[in-house]
Image (cartoon, rainbow, N blue to C red; front, top):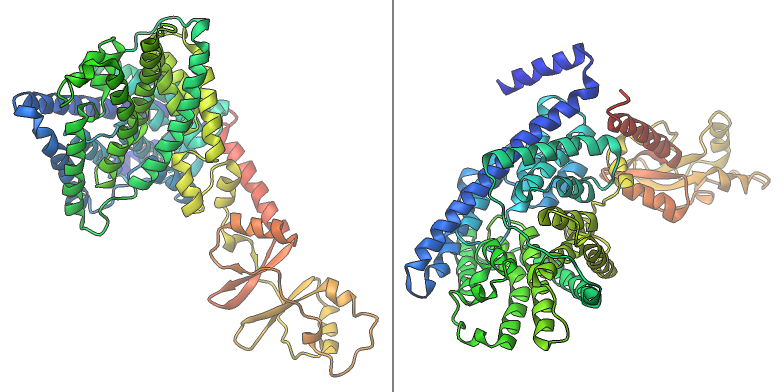
Length: 592
C-alpha cells in the first residue's frame, strides 16, 4: 500500500513539475513524524522512570536499583535477538556509515526498534541518553521516506538530517540546535539549500512536541555573567576539554562491549547488575540523570544526599565536592557499561550530565573558598556546552543548544569561550569526534565531501579494459610493430594465465629507441614493475591516494590474481567532476 502511494505521489510530482518544492514537502512530513516519535519516547520513558522511582521509594536502601537496569537491558537484548533478529543499527556512527556506504538507505525496522529498546533500557534505569535513539529514529524516517519516493542519495541524506534535527529539536525545544547538530555531525557542511529543509523539519518537530507534550527535560535558570567570573570560565573550558578527551576514550572502549567472552544474555545480566551496584552507590546516575540535574539547577544541591549511603558525610562541603567529582568521572563509565552490555542509548545525555556536574564542581569549589561567589546555575549550563563541544566537535550545536534552553543569550560570551577552549583541547588529542574516530581508524570511512563524492564512484566505472597485452618473451622488434599501430602509452606484461608480470611504459621505450635492437632482445629488457597495484573492489579514495603517493597517472588493476585493466587518474578526475556537477544540481533545490 505504501509503495503504491509512493508511486502515485512520484507520478504527481513529475507530471506537475513540483520537483523544486517536493523536498520541502517531504521535510515537513519527516519533521511531523520525527516530532511524534520524540514525543512518544519522552512520554514513555518519563512514565517508566516515575514508576521505577516510586517502586524504589517503598523498598529499604532502594535495593531495587540493583536489579532494574539488568531487567531493562535483558529485555532490550531479547528484543534485538528474538524480535528484531539483530537487524537494528545502534548509534549515530551507523547513520554515517549508511550515508557514506549505503546510498543513505537505512532499514525500516529502525523506525520503531529504537523507540522500544531505548525506552526499556533508560526507563528501567540504564545510565544512557535518549538523544541518539531519537536521532536514529528520525534518520530512519527520513531515509525510508526518500526511498518510498525514489529520491536520490543526496536528497535522502538531507531527509535523514531533517529527521535527526526534528528529533533533537523536539526533545530540547531548540530548533536551531537541532539544525546545527544535523549539519555539523551528519552532513558536515552548511549550505542554504540544505539549511532550509532542515529548518522546516526542525520547526515542525518543535511545534508537534509543544502541542502534544510540553514537559521539558529540564529548565535552566541562569543569571547574567560578571567579568570577575571570566577567569573561572576559562578554567572551566580547560577542564571541559580534558574531560571531553576522557569521555571519548572511556566511552569508545566500553561501548565496544563488556564480558565479551560470555553470551549476550549473560553479558546483559552481568553488565546490568554491575550498573545496578554503581547506581546504588551513586543514585544520581539512574537513567538519564535529568531529574537530579534539574534539582541542582534550582539550587537544591542537598538532593545529592537523597538515596545515598553517604548522606551524613555529605554535610561536609569538601566531601560533597569530592562526591560531585566522582559523579563527573563515573557517569560515562555507567553509560559505557549500559551500552556495552547490550542496552540501547547514547552518550549525548551522559556528556551533558558530566559537563553540568563539572560546572557545579568548579562553582561550588570556588564558592567554598570565599574568593568570589559564582552562579552555580550559570556554570552548570556553560559546563554542559563545554563538554558537548569537546566530545562532538560541534561548538555551534553546543552554544545554541544551551542558549535556546536558557531562553536567551545572557551567557553567550561564556558559552563561546568555554566551548572554543574545550573544542581546541579535544582536537589536540583527536582530529575527529567520537562518532567519526572509529569510522576513520577502523572502517576507513572519512568525513568531508571529497571522500563522499569519491565513494559514489565505482572502480569498475573507470577501469580501461581496452589494452594490448604482451608477454615477457615477446621480441622487441615484434613489439615495435604493435607500437606503430597503437595510441596506448602503457602495456601490460602478462603470462599465459593472465597474471601480471610488469608493464611497459612509453618513457622506458624512448630510452631504447636509438639502441641497436638484437633478435634476442625481449620485453623483459624494457618492462618495469608498476609502482603499485590496485586490487579490484578497493575504494576509489584509496586509489586516489595511490596516485598522489607515487605521482603516476595509470595503475594496473588485479582481480583474483589476474590483470583486468588500467585505471587512469585523468579518467578518475573526469568522473569526479561529473559527480560534483550532479551533486551541486541535487543540492540546489531552488535552481531546478
